Length: 208
Image 1 (cartoon, rainbow, N blue to C red):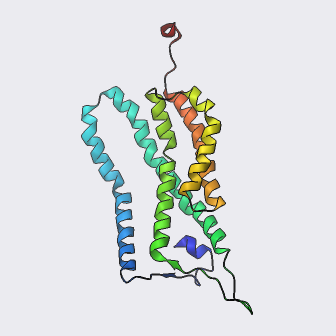
Image 2 (cartoon, rainbow, N blue to C red; image 1 turned 45 degrees about the vertical axis):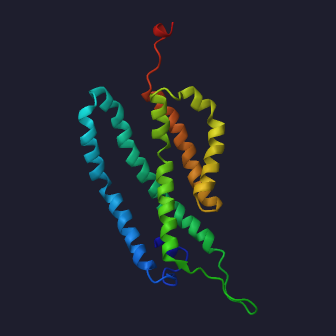
Image 3 (spheres, helix red, strand yellow; image 1 turned 90 degrees about the horizontal axis):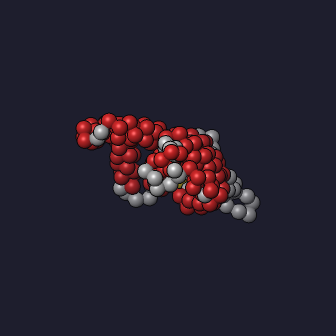
């Protein structure tokens, strides 16, 4: 609730629920989301221990950087959304509140707890998944579907696509859209560097 409180003094904000079971199911959602998040290292490790014996040593060396980078990038995206994008977006939306006047009534936010939580979870997942782009692009280059040259040539189209995707998966404000699109552009450039580093260059003698 820190983002909601950031829009006011912290004491004049409250959240409501309009259905009898809404608060109960909201707590269940929080518990489930937290359980999946904090238990991820455990079941991810168990999955790796199940798969690893069937892989060659070279395959393990190839996959390991992706396995380490993926959760790190997800946490980075989630942290960016929660600690940076949320406060800015919330202040933008709450700025549309208006006090009561002589001939008008006050317009004030009364946030539903379930809708607020759904938006928070949506933003965290959207940013976390979007930050997997370097892993995906580098992996596609590694298996030969893409290459560094195609990534460089498609940079302009990729930038347009990133802004379009950011507009779709974020709330309808320019702050959230730019807050996701700009990091994605930086991650795209990092993907080009990572692909050039991880993908071996063709041998000129073999090409001849």
